[in-house]
Image (cartoon, rainbow over all chains, first blue to last red; front, side):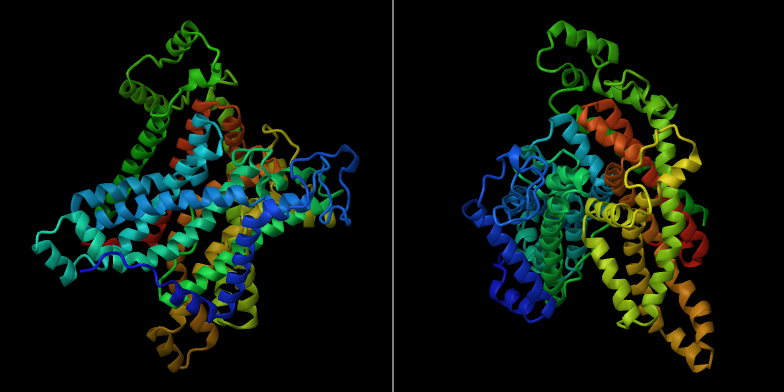
Length: 289
Length: 316
């Protein structure tokens, strides 16, 4: 009987780095994270500063990535453009993992009618495409980064319920769980001390994946004008903004696209390597999740 | 067979009811309602009360839900706040347009995905598989709005093959919409096919290693016969349920892809409705999408039942 053990970070790192795709992914993600942290210090110009005299300039020494339709420095905006989305994704992932795993583990442990009812609800909620679910709330609450965190945390937690339940079902009939039940332990205590340690590897891998899906969701919402609001620079918003001028100023479009794509691809490579190393069946982006 | 069939249909009905409850009460529990959101902060109490009475918002929630759901079943989707017109009228044409887009996508995308999946799975790790799977993983990883924008950049701006942005109105004749849906459908196919072909590839690889395929080979059946008579039918069965699930993605993807290409469908209408804070319209569209999803999945289930006798007995 032990509580949730801390993830063996050195071991995980070693396993991921032992694979070539894992190394590539890890380097890309680390690069992105350090840029995100250091961006306010290293961005050469104010990302919101509009310069009517320097609109749509091609890349130069003064503007490495050129300028956009309002004369803003694309290099500075690209450096800073992932911060808000990453912050929202991180907070929403914590919420999604917390309630999703708790509900999934308990549903599997209690079983019977409770389990059936919970899963029917989760099924039904997942039949509404996530984006419409989020839009439903955005329409009511207005679009703000603060409102997005609980909304995304809720809708992305649904697929975590599935995963946590499926992973737990392998263990609920094992002797050590039955023994704990006979000893008279409460459900919460069995879930926390017997089941959680056995499913936390799958959950951790899933959490890393959730993070990159939520990041994509935030960027997509920003692209649609429902996510990160100006003047805060954001990749999705920059892409939406530069679409109309892609013929004249392709640089304003390419850099944010490259930044977002490389982060997500890097994350996928790293998580794939991690899943292979721990032997966890990592589910691909569930359609509709 | 009949019992399984009834069970599936019953579950689908229960799911529909739950979706309706969620869509209705999710907004009901939020601060603010259609009236306060539309009239804004400056609305006086008497204006709010008048608006509430007009929309029936002064009734108890349960009663409102029953009338809302009942009206929905009769085809009355309520009144749009911003557009001051019946929602059914606004939604009807866009629904047709979205169905045209989804139809073009599925008719081309699904056979393409099945074919490519089988090709990739027959020679796993071969050069063809590496190429197909590589592109598929890219398509599954990169978000829809980037794929769509890349499509415009390559096929419209650089090559000049097709117009990047749809300019026709939502009441345009059907064949014009089919023409306008080339690039949006290509974007959806790119992603949809990636999901399906990965599944088909995996199941082809699995079937190729199964005993009955080994047996057929040992009997001396030709490669062509093994592939067409033994591998393909068995590998495609699991794909059917995946196609059903992928429709859910397609419905969500449609929202973004339609916005990228300015395609006059239900998805873009939803985005506009959110921008206008038109709550009744957003609710109606969400419910509609949920129902389409359940029906599609039910359809996929039934097709799987017809094709695979093993599913027809009740699992205990």
